[in-house]
Each structure stands twice: as C-alpha cells, then as structure tokens.
Length: 331
Image 1 (cartoon, rainbow, N blue to C red):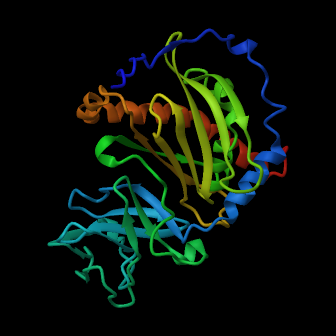
Image 2: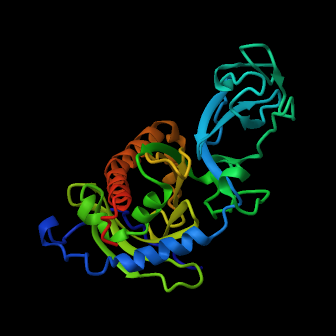
C-alpha cells in the first residue's frame, strides 16, 4: 500500500531581485516574434463567432443590446429560457429593440408592437447563438466574413462543477489585434504588473508550427513576499482569443480565456474593443471544495484582479493602436 502523498503548502517565499534589479526583457521580447505570432493567430478561423458576455446574459427577463463590429445586436430569453439574438433595429421603423419588452418569451417592439419570437419576421432574421456554460456567443457572418461554423472554436476547460469561474468585461480604444498582441507579449508581466507577477521567465517561444505557444514560469504575488509559482502556457486558438493555461504548480489545469470583441466597424477611425476575460480556476487540493462553496464571494475578487490588470493592459493596447494609426509603431 503506497504512503499518502505529503501535503505541501501552495505559497512560497519570494527571494528574487527587486523590480529595478530584474533582468531586462526587452531583447527577448522581439517585435518580429510577437508580430509573427499575431499574424498566425489572425489567420486561424473563428467561424464568425463573437463573445457578447457571460453565459446567462439577458437572464433577468429583459432584452439587452450589444454592438459587434458596428452591428447592433439584441439578445433576450424565450419562454423556455433559451438565448435568442438578432438585429437590434426593428425592421418596421428602426426602433431600438434593446429598449423593448419581453412578453412570455416574445420580444415586442415598444414603438408599434411588432412581435419577434426568434424566427424570421418582416425581413428580420435571427442570429445563431451559443452558450458554453461560461460565455455567450453570437455568430455574425457579415462581420466575421469567414466560413461559418455551427459552434465557436472549443477551448478545453476544467469541469464547471469542480471550478470557480468569473467573467470580467472592459472597454478599450483599440482594435482586437492590439489586445491579442498584449497577451502575446508575456515579457512585460513582471515589469508592467509588479503587483501581480514576479520572477517571470519565458522558457519557450513559438516556432510557427503546432500549437504555437509561449511557455512562462512565473510567480503570482499573493501578499508581500508570499507567491504562488506556476508554469503557464499561452496560445491563440483564433484571431480574437488568447488562452492561458496553468500546466504545472498550484491550480494546474486552470484557464484564463481572453476574448477581444470589436464594437466598431473595421473602417472606424476611432475603434473600440470589448475585452471579455473568463477565469476558470480549479485545483486538486481537498480544500478547494471550500473555495467552490465561497464562489459567490470569490467572484467579485476575481473580477477585481482582472480589472486591475486590464487597467494597465488596455493602456498598453490603446498605446499600440495610437502608434499604429499614426505610422509610428516601432514594430
């Protein structure tokens, strides 16, 4: 009979150099390497699917509106609770359907009473939707311009029953490519976010084949010198998505999905992008069951941590777009 595995604490004491004494990472963070990974990500199919929020959106009985690639979208729940979506402008005289009412699962225009039950009516055509338990998606073929698929590109995640999930949404004055480029630059982590990351080392970079991944050893700061060291892998399975997966260390298997949804049309001189980030945290430790029980209290803290990072990372993405739009981007 094998002996039970020895319990090890998840926290470690950090004994690395201070912020100013870190090894500079700018030589390794080669613009051409990041640009090549970004170009390959942009070429991957997305099936014309766009994230429009967390799963359960429009679950309060009222419709809600989204802007995706300059297209107005209205979302609501039918009588069975299924998500429905379609053009956000009434086909009759253009009323904003997001301000209308849902009556017994039917969307009723508040201007003249045109009833939409999710099927084609008077030139109004529904959009395909999908909920994967964490996020809600809508398929817009005219915006995506690619080959449509029945479902979004699947990302392997921990089982929802054994995980704690939280979804954060932020807005930036940039394009989706600028958000993806930020995530494909892991070298900035401990320089730009010293409150969250220390002792960061990129140990593998993409070679342009296979999964095309960045592998990073990093310690997440908890408090003071207390950190949680992990190995994380960053991949870009589509043109608007970057996935970080913990492959070694505490929380192995946990996933952070970052999705960039364009709000404005590609030709807009003032682009805006929504960042929708889903954190799906899991752990094999026995005590994690207590964390799941406290999920309602943990979610706001998880969203707050994402918001703090994206306060800085959106500034990065916005700066990148500003330089690109004036032809002054150094890459």
